[in-house]
Length: 466
Image 1 (cartoon, rainbow, N blue to C red):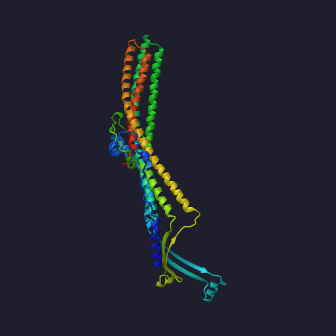
Image 2 (cartoon, rainbow, N blue to C red; image 1 turned 45 degrees about the horizontal axis):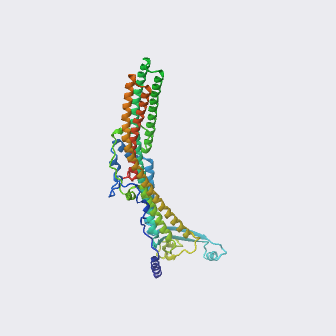
Image 3 (cartoon, helix red, strand yellow; image 1 turned 60 degrees about the vertical axis):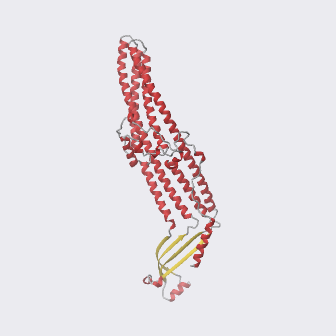
């Protein structure tokens, strides 16, 4: 017993030479101006703090996001990864506990008659020996250098990394469902305009035919109008096909079989116009992929601690005991009891460079994790910057597109009246009509891009998983 006390005291005296370090977030100077804008608030409020239910107010969209979060295959896979990591965390917490094994053995041994044991047995009239044993073994390693603690922290960091990865999947899913839904609304709006254009051009063919019969235009004008009419009909087919494909894309996101989805209209969509970015450091607590990258760095840091601790001696105490007897009916007798206690320090000296290799690999992996963390932050900042710039650009473009549509529709109306009265060329009308249709389709696309840039900014800031 005194020997065990001496070993324990010696080990804890040596502990002053090495203690597992605590993780501290690195200072990343290159990520201070991530958003590339001076329009930052003085506080840390960010639109990413909003729940997706607060940002999106379309009842159909809210319903589809809820369904996607329940049924999407990627979400369900991520949940299983979280459960697996949680199991490892439970194992890491048990690292401080001793291991206990129980065993029960029975053996019968036969010896050579010419051997010493066989000759001795022959004299007693036996040709074998029976042995029965019931026992247990208890083993415990003292966490002198913080090796077990660091391993536990590494497993916890890996668990939190999988949780953040799951949150990233949710954030991306919410963004994808919203973007796909808005694309459907935009396609619906473009299809409605195209159908109206088809009707107008159908009527125009009859008008041009009447003008040709009156000698005001030639057959070329009739043919050109027929061609334009069929061009609009082909565009209608393209839009209907795009709607069909987009609905199928939405069904995959929702984890459902392909079907037609009810929805509202594009003009009713109003997202929050007061975009709040927050300060760049909010990415560290809001953006799941950045959070996951940092937990990966924490994991690598703690595994480096584990590798460093392998250079130092380990203290292990083990005990075994139980019942042992040559006769089965005497096995549980008090005279059959036995016990062993063993304790010792083990210091690695020569092990084919395995420990040093482990340490060098751990250091390289920690540096790699740090670089990946920096890259995740830089990518996040770039995505926020791009989304914000795109939103401002699309807002300006939408105003110009609206003015363009107004001017071209006036030009189309005026050209039609002038043609009927013989003051304009039919080519002027065809050009004005085609330009007006393209402008109306473009203004819808511009409205769609406005919505998509808000969704992109929301995801880039780390919104959607709360």
